[in-house]
Image (cartoon, rainbow, N blue to C red; front, side, top):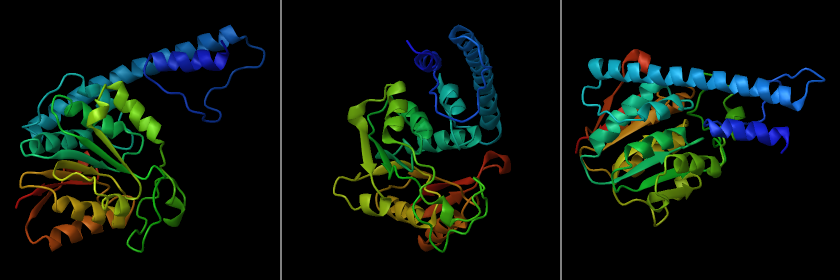
Length: 288
């Protein structure tokens, strides 16, 4: 077995996937494969130790938020693992998401995620609805971000690209990566619906969900967020919830889409902001 395969298998054995990133690990010339493997094994063990520490941190954060902001947040064994593995979504936002999801489960409807990226948030949501019979709908182009519109003015240059236009096509993740994360938590494939394509087209398909109880919207830009919210308005009963990411962050278009939507709905939706330290997102509740 080659050294590359040894490293890959070691990483997978403790829950990691290896990706090619230049110059992360430097190995001195002349060292043997056994020495390289030992060094990498030690580093992976250290990484796993730090990961376990981070998991304990998520438990403390959950307990704190339950005391100060989310008194109805139910407990679930193993949640700390999915929270610790979130990518681009902090632990606090993950907990607000879980809280809104469980409140929404009081009403009929399926669960949707608009913009799934690597599937880390999908894994968290899937784990929370495992004991239900709800279908889980994933809407994503799997082609990265679309072209921004004039509403998408850059306010946080997260990748230091210099302009909003340069973000088109970034943040792309393959469908297989998302499915791999869901398989890891053994979410039933028969309850999974993959809606591949740009949202303005996929929401027009005949096989879209007829009723939605909860949605997580993480589309970054004005047009797709607007399209998703208007789609949800027609399919959500009072008591349903949506969490919209990047409110006031990255692109001005995200907040603009939400604010315009809420204003146009004439009191049908209630917008709630999190505690200031919790992140850049809002929760929407359907009132009528």
